[in-house]
Image: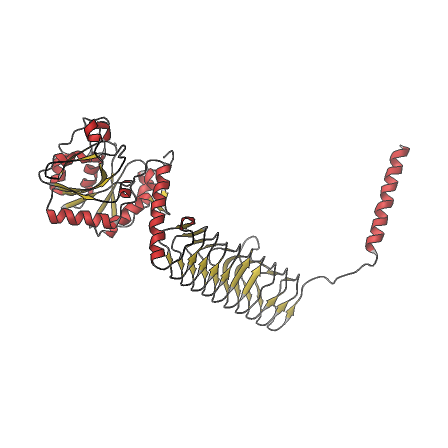
Length: 451
């Protein structure tokens, strides 16, 4: 991976690749999960959900050795053991459930997930016996030319009878090209039948470098986009929409190109999001429209308008029908129902009442260099352009402020607050100033000639 991070911590579609595997396992309703950690153990352990245990593999001596380490930490009462790779995020709960069902119904010693590839490359080949059951798996580096011609390959997902697995692991050798104990070698050592469940080819896609990472990202994005579109969401160009697994979008909503929905973002019914919009951990109500904007840990109410080029920071909340317009930034602010902040304004640590209109270029000056203070603007207030509200300050209901005012004191309900110098007009100023400048230039030139 050419990285300082453990491979399984690299994110795919917003999750560490290991988290995708664990989510698939959890969805199959297993009773106990153990993650075998080695390189980067501390970082890997930090992302594990509650109830998932770890076992440390001090020396990396192969997948068979890793499985032995994991078994030592597994609940002794577990009789069926599921083994997966942490760098294969495309395995899903349905595949695992099908594997376990086939394994338990047939009463086999082991069952594996396989797939068929036109070009098997470096994958281990599945060799079947005359009865159609799996005889063994041969790693590509150790395979004969005849075995390399096999197109059915090992995906690295197995179910074992625990007693059979433990017995076979004790007899696995390391006489191979890599000098490692291979888990698939146990298949030829167990006392009983070994079956296979054939899955889609994408299940085999593991991650060994950044190109594999991108390939898995593409598959997971297609899965999530497809699920939303089948649920009634429109995407004119699905390839230009990026999702994460916690995202929800209501039917009849439209996601336009350049839309990124991350974290626990929830979009309501009949919304339009994008183009060029990023929402992270943000709730968007029914019928809202968010255009070319960014929102993080924010809430956009029903029928609101946001953007273009708005920036909603954590704690920003727009109530029904409110507007955050062009080049507007909001943070820790509540914008009341029907209120508008149309353009070029910063509203931070503030409350704006219903149906108020904040003029262009307004700023709530919320920070005195040491502490944050709150601005409270009442209902149906109209503020002039280029006003600064120096918090803490309160503007009463139905009040107004004059353009260019710096408001430092409260403005009572229904009053007009103006805080600016009286304008002065000097007649003929431009001509007089020009004449003075020309005279000064002449004097400068004459002084240079005499010298």
